[in-house]
Amino acid sequence: MHKIIFGNTQVTPSKIVCIGRNYVDHAKELGNDIPSEPVIFIKPNSSISKRLSIGSKEPNHYEAEICFLVQKGQLVAVGFGLDLTKRATQTRLKEACLPWERAKAFDGAAVFSKFVAVKKEQINRLSLELLINGERRQAGGVDLMLFKPLVILDEITQFLSLEDGDIIMTGTPKGVGEVEFGANFTGKIMIDDEVVVEDSWIAE
Image (cartoon, rainbow, N blue to C red; front, side, top):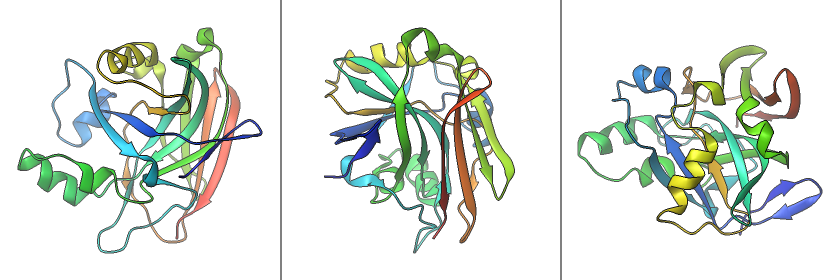
């Protein structure tokens, strides 16, 4: 089982619960309708990777996200995540009204920074930034989300049990694109203007 880092501890998520179309501008850039309730899908533990892969038969696309670690039913820590997507496959599956697993749940489809503790009152002040080769490609925060993190948590737990160590990915702002070989990705999570998480990967 793959692990993530919370503080100085290794944690094993049983699953990753993801939210799609949670930023209006991102939904529009992909030509999707604006949802009236959270779009929820799952990545397995096997999708977690420390490597940022460009993909083999089909390019991977990056989607930067604010991510939360769950313990005792609460959002206790925050980290930066990349939801890797096989966009052409996803488009084909969506057009056929089929599930997205081939496009979203493959091995290596979830890349995470370390996680740091976050207080409930700080959650609505969180934002992210993704730099690629030093250029800002994505930026956004909870203030732009259609469904805020605590609303997402409530929606998920109405039908799905969350185990300690599970991760929630809260959606991506506009600016997604293809992962290119050798590109330097730097992800940041901020509370107000203070960086609380920062990590980097070289696409390979």
